[in-house]
Amino acid sequence: MSVEAENTEERGGVKDTIRVIIHALILALIVRVFLFQPFNIPSGSMIPTLLIGDYLFVSKYSYGYSRYSFPFGFNLFPGRIWASEPKPGDVVVFKLPRDNETDYIKRVIGLPGDEIQMSHGVLHINGKPIEKVRVDDYVVADQAGRERRMPRFIETLPNGVSYPVLDIVKDGFGDNTEVYKVPERKFFMMGDNRDNSTDSRFLSEVGFVPFENLVGKAQVIFFSIDNDSSFWQVWRWPSDVRWSRIFQTVQ
Image (cartoon, rainbow, N blue to C red):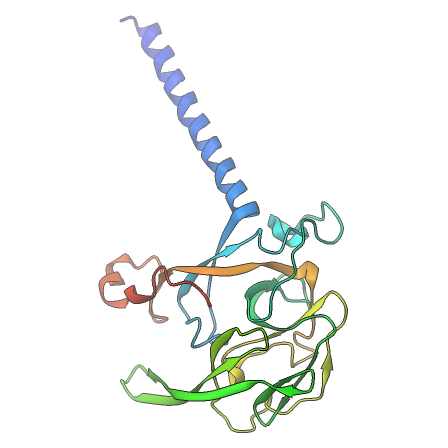
């Protein structure tokens, strides 16, 4: 084989490799924008449902698409297309209304037109208290191995959706609120870790979340690692990965 023929084959091989890489990047972008986007949990506001160090997939198609479905928030069209309203109890990633940039994850509690209030730690929707049953203690251990127990409850919304919540402080800062009337095309969000969640109860921090700001619905945990470790510390995976949480659905 001549040198010229070898060079031609090499150039052809490089072009094929570049073509494959470009196709893979385009496919990954399509999946991220229209189907699923990965997120990680940096705070404890959704404990015990989601833990710090959980990595999950969020379905982008669940509620349709808005400018926040796209990288950098490109405003390609007004409002939301192929829209589907979230259901009470859904765990949702959204853009913080205060800056329209920061990703938050909370549970949908109130739909447009609902009246929401917390009274002595009990959630009220449209004037009626939501069923809240004490089930057990949620136990966590600090770095020194000392255990801390927190009361765990099961709340059940009017549509039948049940989920666990923590109520650490009796009559805590967010346990007694005014009545919030959810405006049209907005939603009321709350964290499951009620005394450690900045959510719609605090109007100057989060407040009501516009429909347009919804990014997607949390679907499944694909990886989980102790919050003292990082994803890239592969050598710590055998001891620090929470194997039992992998492939758990988010409910």
